[in-house]
Amino acid sequence: MNYRAVETDAEYVARLECGADWRDEIERLADEVNADAAWFTALGAVQDATLWFYDQEACQYEAIEFDQPLEVASCVGNVSLLDGDRFAHTHAVCSDPDGTAVAGHLDAATVWAGEVYMRVFETELERTYDERTQLDLWL
Image (cartoon, rainbow, N blue to C red):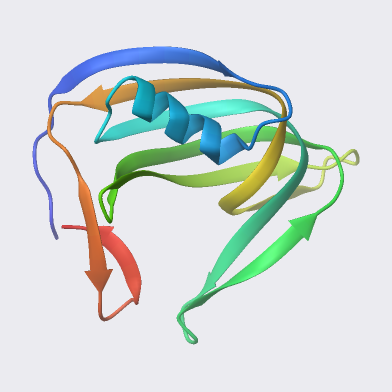
């Protein structure tokens, strides 16, 4: 297990812009506050979404696309550096008009309304390629 203590540097709340990309908005917030490491939670609604499921046997993501409005019942993730850029590793649980929930790694979604809370850490987190999982994981 790889772990370290982190100290909180700052905390922010933000409203995501309607029509923007959900994950891009979180990365934009991280850029604006110079967050090289952070933890965030969010909620709201999107007009569409692409969630990914990671097939552990094939070591690749499979896209699940939704071209309909969804509620974002829960969104959680972290910000770290990936190839020198801030990357928001984002997972979400979304529900359709019938209340059926879907979940996965949120690749993209068009914001209808969204609110995010971000806790920024003093120590940066950097991702690097992990041979076993074929994923970019924290060092």
